Image (tube, rainbow, N blue to C red):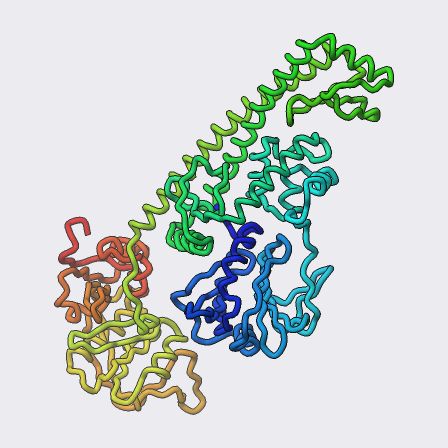
Length: 626
C-alpha cells in the first residue's frame, strides 16, 4: 500500500506545478495534519491549491473544507507571501524536496520537504522566516533566523552517464537494489523495477556483479527515466482496491488493474479519497500479510536458486575437461584466457565464471571439478530444503491470517450488533426526567454534581426537591413555578427513588419541594455543610407515602428516541415500559436485561437506574422474554 510520494512522483509533480509560475500567492491554510497553499493561476486559470501532508502526500488538490482561522504558521506564510508572484517551481536534484519560489519584497522560497517526517520551511534570501516543525540535526538547523541548508543529497541518477552509473554501483558495499534506493534516490518501488527490467537478482551486490549485468541496470534506469518524461499516471488496484499510484506503468504491476488519470495529482487525490473511505485494515492481519508476502519472495528466491545451482553443476560436469584445465592453470598461478573467466580472488582462492549476461558462479581453484560440482549440488539441495521449510511456514502464516480475519470479522459483527447510543443532551451529565406535564427535572449524581445542580441551574421560577432522607440528590424542577401538582409530586418521587432509600430496600418514603430562595449554602452558626449539601430554611411542602417504584420507558425528545427513568405517571404514554423496584442482588444484571430490551448500550441504562439492585415488577411492550 502506498504510504507517500517518492522521488519519481515529485519529479512528475514538479512539472504539473509549473501551472503556478507567473501566478500570485493567495492564501495558506493549516489543518491538523495537512496544509494547502492557494494560488491564482495566470491566463484566467482561476485558483489552484497545493495540498501537502509533510513527509507523505503532495498534489494539486482543491480542499472542500478549510480552517476558518489561520494558525500562527499559516498566518506567517500569508503575511510574507501575500499577492507575491510565483517565479519557479523546482525539484532539488532527484530528492523528495520541492521549492516554490515567490517574489515579494525579495525572493522567498516555500520549501516542501517530503522525506522522513517532513517539514515546510519559508526562506527569504536564504534565511529561514518560518518553519512548521523547528528541528536541529547534526548537519543543519531548522529555526527562524538561521540560514537554510538542505539535507545532504544523494546522487542524482539523471546526471550520470553509463560509466558513472556503473561506477557508483561498483563502489557500493550494499546490494544493487539498496544502492539504487538510497544512494541514487530511486526509492524501493523504482529500484525493484529497475532490477526487474535488467533481469538481475535485486540482492546482488554491485561489486560482485559483472559489467554486462550492471550495464543492463543502467539500461533499465534509462528506460524508466524516458517513461517519466511522458507520464501516464494511474491508480493501481488489486481486486479493485487501490494499492499504489504511479506516474508510469510498471512491470511489477502487470497482473494488477490500472485506472488512468490525466495528471498524477488527480490519481493521488483519487487514492487518498479511496483510502479515507475504506475501512481501516486490522494491524495484526496486515502484519501477517506482510510476513506472508516476504515468505513468498523467499520461496521464489529459493526455487530459483535450486534450478540455477542444479544447472550450473550440470554445466560443470558437461565441460569437465575444460574446467579441470582452468582450475589447474589458476592454481599454478596462471591467468586462464576466455570470455567466461572473471576475476580471480587470490585471498579467497576463488575464480568467478560468467555464464550469459548475468549468471555468475564461483569455483574454489584448490578443489577438484568433482568437489566444486558437488558444492553446487549441495547448494541446490539446501535451496530445495529451504523452499520446503518456507512452504510449511507459509501454511502456518495462512492459517494465522484465516484465524485473525475470523476474529476481526467476529469483533466487527459484535460491534455492528452492539446497540447504538441515543442522542446525548446536556442534562445527561445529571440525573434527569421529564414530568408528565413536560417539565425537565435534573438531580445530582454525586457531591460535585449536587453542587452544580443548585449553583448553576437553580434559578428564579424553578423549584427544588429533596427526599426526607440523608444521602439524597438535590433536584431542580426547571420553570417549576408553572408546573402543576403532578410534576411536583413526580419530582419528589424521583428524588426519593435516587436516594439511599432504594439501596436500603424501603417500600415507601417521603420527600418535599421548596422555593429557590429557601435553599442556601450558608450553614447555621457553628455548623458546617459538606460538599454537595445545602441548608433548606422555611416551610417545606411534603409529599408522603411515595412508593419506591421507577418506570423505565421509551420517549421521544426533540425528534430523538430516548430511554428515561421516572415515576410511572411520567411514562404512561410510552408503549414500552419496565417498572422496577428495590431488590437484592447485582445492579448490573437488571441493567443488562433492560439494555437488551430497549436496544441501547448498558451504560445508558445504568445512568438512569437508582443506586442499588432492582427487579422488574411490571412490564408492557417488551416481549415475553423481558
